[in-house]
Amino acid sequence: MKIVVCVKQVPEITDVNVNPETGTLVREGISAILNPFCEYALDHATQLKITQQETEVIAITMGPPQARSALFRCLELGDDRAVLVSDRKFAGADTWATALTLSAAIKASVPDFDLILMGKQAIDGDTAQVGPELAEILNLPQITYGVEINLSPKKKRIRVKRETEHGYEVLETRLPAVVSASKGELIRRVPSFQDVLTARLKDLRVISADDLDLDETELGLKGSFTQVINVFPPPQKQGGIKLEGLEPEVAARKIATYLRKEGFV
Image (tube, rainbow, N blue to C red):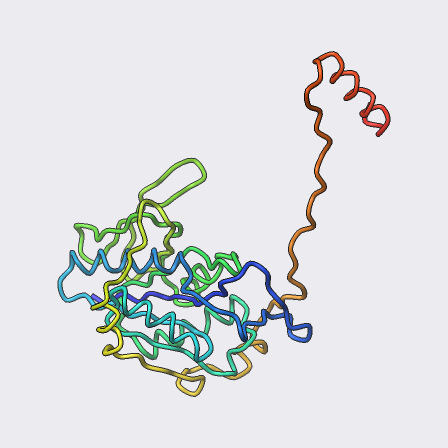
């Protein structure tokens, strides 16, 4: 069984800057981490690997050369090998162009995959779109917000417990499939020192735009149907008026006076 885990490196900051010409995030000079939701997907893959013999887990990410550090983190957490999809032609990609590029990279590097896992969303964009778009491009069944993933007793099927607005539901689908992972009850693992050393001996392959069966017009900013015009924090709300230490009757009169003054009553 071959499990592909799509991951993303995200900025480790709360304040972001945007390139005024491209509308994309400025990532240069900013420390980065592996997206936390991607680590939950990695944990699901590792648990499946423990229960299933002859299972290989492959991490794949699209990003600049420094995204290697995110892939090394994946290898430290138990992945067998990693693929970095890196090329300046990918710069400025929106969720669609990202999903299209990842689909081509998966076909090129792991054509015989059985399962694709990914975090439900990235903490820098919070769109939760790449997973569903990837499934549509590859014409695969998809299950989102998975918190428990197990192979079904039936061959080539998977059973997933997923979060909903009102609780949980259990779905089963055939393989290959795409599953996006939510946090659930998983606790993100910490690799041992030996895991860190072993990760440096594992295979990390780099592929570029030339290795993919895609036209340049489908990549990066050129292939993006959407573009970020501006990114900014919401305006801070002003603090309200607090009445303290007053008798109820006095406080009620003050509130009534304020409401009449402001035109609410």
